[in-house]
Length: 150
Length: 313
Image (cartoon, rainbow over all chains, first blue to last red; front, side, top):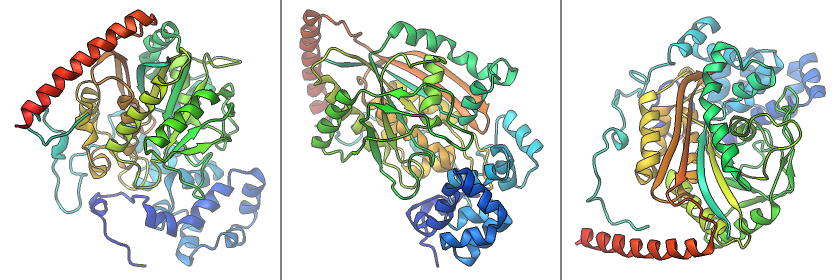
């Protein structure tokens, strides 16, 4: 189960949906995809745990879905575009889900967005490499950069 | 000969589509967003392209996790709007241009870009929202055929910015070798900064976005060197969609005229960015003018080659 560490795991509050999570989360995401059909939404709502059995989720994944723990679903391989379909099945707007994942009320989240969103300052890095990426900070001329053609 | 005359960058926020579909465009929140596209619609109406290539990404609509093609080119005659959970968007079916699409596929695959060919595909807001923003809301049909190019930016890793840029160049070469006289525009969509997943959702980085737009106009090669980690860290996990704009940019001349730009925060969870870039040499349409520009181009190329070789020593 141990996840291969990646450079982007250093980004706080972020579960990058990479090839490893895609493999692990196949069941969660295909379950969510099935909710595009009304008949499936009804079957799921009628008996959630029973419906989930078709998708061979791990016990942790099943628990995360049943509890609507959206961050945990992402951590266990769910992708936001898929899990959003579960939110829609519950009748929630996307902003509601976003607020839930950030631990804010929807009102506070909406107010933060209107005020320009969450700042990147202080939110770049877990390890403290909290500096802007150097590749695009200043438009210094790169004339001496290595030979490239076309 | 077909020719790409301009590139359009535009966000494709789903809530923009919902605002259009539910008649909310006059609400102050949305008016702020839509007002930024008034000039663009006018520009598009005047430009009258024969074909549009739209680079976008599918959001778990046509592609689940069963198939995750990196570059998928729509070669079908038509692409119906997808049902994204609220019924298909009330927009016309998108008509393709199968002949040009097949030509592009053949050309770029031989140029070593291993495209996936899609002959049946529904298209979601990633494609239809930018089309609405530029073409308005036609009832029966879109003003021109459209070739969709779906790029995987959902599963990491998406193609690199450099790869996208080079694919753009290959697309341009393909279009320019198509015998029919067609005026083509290309859209790069998605972005700008946004994160919609996890505890860091809501991230916006306007400084990054402005830099991106500046460099897109003047120094796109610089953007091609940005590693994925920088997009995700600085512009949000989903901000990595911006690599799709580099396909559009690669399909244009090195030097372009920026004819329009718009930026506003937020639409829903996202920074809305928009830019229109025209190739310096307006498509003259006359063969004489074309040969002239060709000579001029060749001369310019020689000069620049000289410069490059000087620089190397």
